[in-house]
Image (cartoon, rainbow, N blue to C red; front, side, top):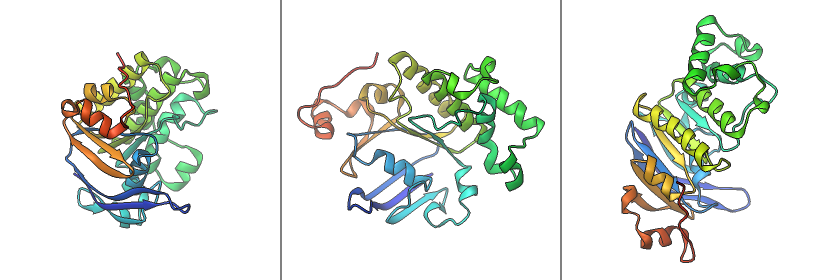
Length: 250
């Protein structure tokens, strides 16, 4: 269970990215977060794993208060993060990037020198096989296509064995076919592994295809929380504006 209570984030320039937002997400749910750019989607995900410090409010994961936790290492290893721009170590090999998903479980010295055991290496190779990249393990990350790099990011998240996956616009820079491939992997993590998924998406058609639940943000507040099929044309315009036009991703 993820619980968010009265979460507010005000940046130093005065921008109120989140405005007294409250939310509960049961274990095992796939939630799509939609809204215009600047609506607070990325800030919400980054507050959950404390990449951004909230101004006020509480975030709890299974009753443990994330916003008060001093041991961020133990909290973050339960929360996998998949980034829009992949966030890989470009010069490192694909296998090394995947192994970095276990850094939260290793000693500081092992982390510093990237020392991993045989079991971790075997697990990393299994994660790469799962996303169809076994043959790429020795290549540098920056030699891969965008879709392949995102699949490395998914394999890295799998290595954490997290309870919660936060995906921040994971398909924003990908073509439609590759976007579906990436979201199919997230769906497998949700349905097969029981991981809770919060995924920021631009396209409502993708939210309708993959999500159990849609949350729409506008100016840092929730303006819709319900089933994907409940978003009709009127609600769409409420979320995106009267001039907005729906774009389908086939």
